[in-house]
Amino acid sequence: MPFLYEQLDTLRDFGSYTEIPPYIQENVNQRFELRPYQIGAFENFITYFENEKMCRKPTQTLFHMATGSGKTMIMAGLMLYLYKKGYRNFLFFVNLSNIVNKTRENFLNALSSKYLFADEIRLNGELVQIKEVSNFQYSDDDAINICFTTTQGLHSDMWTAKENALSDDDFANKKVVFISDEAHHLNVDTKALAKNKDEQDNYKSWEYTVRRIFEMNKDNVLLEFTATCDIHNPQIRAEYESKIVYDYPLSKFRADGYSKEIKTLRSDVSVM
Image (cartoon, rainbow, N blue to C red; front, side, top):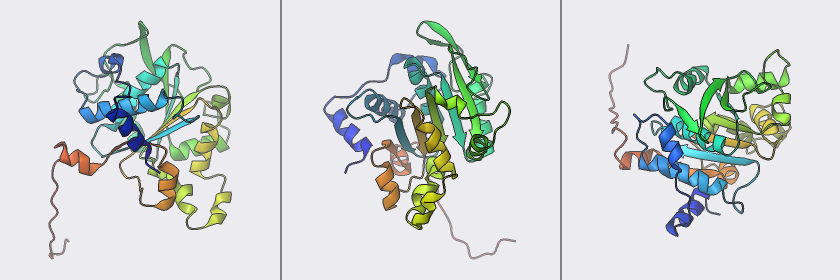
């Protein structure tokens, strides 16, 4: 079976794809010109999401893109697109807390040199704010509400009741966009199946927690991003064949001239 991105490449060859809407480029930071492969990533997702015959519900996609290729810009642009589609609640989670902090800075701090959005975001003719929230109980229907957490923190919150933390109530009757960076950390259970079938009973794993809340609403969207998807692992390939919406690995990134060549030298001198 071909990968999802290969099916989308075929549609593109026949001109059956959706072009990136102007409002995405208008509402991201104008200092960062979108590169052709980033535009391709947007168009692949939008083509898939708007194709009722192809798009599965709830919607899970993986962007397999090289480190340094600007995955967070794709995240920002897709927030704008999905806001236009009626989504207001966004959950960003990743394995490491320092990445959470860097991403929070890129999404929220307009004074940062790496801020991803325009000075003013205008969608549907209205000024739209980006707000950080700790849960979605009182989220703003006229804003992009983002909750930042680690994978471990999300897992803990969902199994242990805490004041002002995320809980099942945040997902029971709301459609949410889940954004996972370095998503290979989500594959703990998938990889484990090849080693020990008994591990299928480990219902309190990170992956199970994410899967459980993701599947609470058929309109939920899960956007996974990683530079290192192990597609040669049969279990991983079987899981992600129908989900990899865009493929831009390091080899393509380097061939297009965006990545600096890195040379490694061998030395027999011991390092003290």
